Image 1 (cartoon, rainbow, N blue to C red):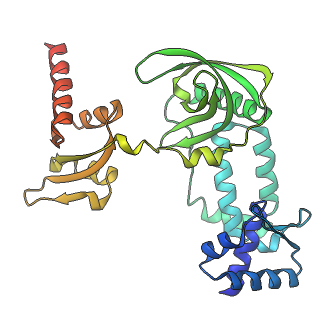
Image 2 (image 1 turned 120 degrees about the horizontal axis):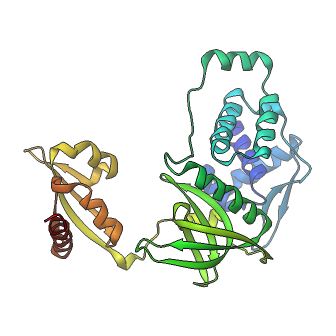
Image 3 (image 1 turned 120 degrees about the vertical axis):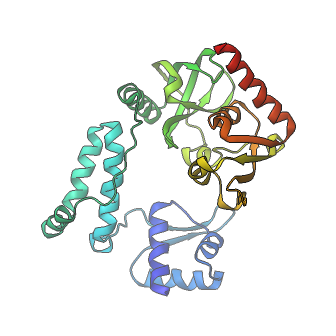
Length: 311
């Protein structure tokens, strides 16, 4: 157990610049004294650990240190190669080609033959089923702009259909659900925004280089999907048995109650917006909004407008 924990600490320090003792103790569920002893043992084993005091203090591994291939198993390398192939399927980046070649070179010939016999167990596809070529071109340009800190001008269409030209400072790209998104600082809104690539109608990379900002992609991603707590409302829905699979795929099991007649009663929380209306309408006559009444009236009104359009 101690050996596994020490190896975990080494891997964490190799992937992070500096980590505090409190964070390590919490992560590995041990006391601070145990972490101090682990650090002494790691140092004694030949891994150069430096400690820093103060508010931003902690432990870090000397920059020159690296792990040997023997510490990385075949399963580890296979997982890395699988993830890289998924990225390469979308980005078509020559640097990723070179990286894949390097990772494959770390796999012994005997191990490669074994992998060829067993075949792939996991396939990661990050390309949307539609708009593949268009989004791929945007990905390449935006990724390069983020790397070089170049301002990007883009025509962006919001969910209401309004298209506005914006100047943004791209931070990075993220695959969420079934689409690619750009995280960037928007000069029009003077704050960070998330832009769905499929809604970017036109983009132009400017020669202007923007100053480096302290926010990182992982920091912005941590805020993904966080709505204002005041905008949440509790909704109660009743679904027809024919859509049971869809309901179980979308809602948490503890939110679903199966009634004696086979109908499903769901109690959940959502912010009220156009996305919620679209989601409920996608079930057609197989769902009824029980609470709140204001949401039921909204769905009923939109359903009548649909009927009137076809009349």
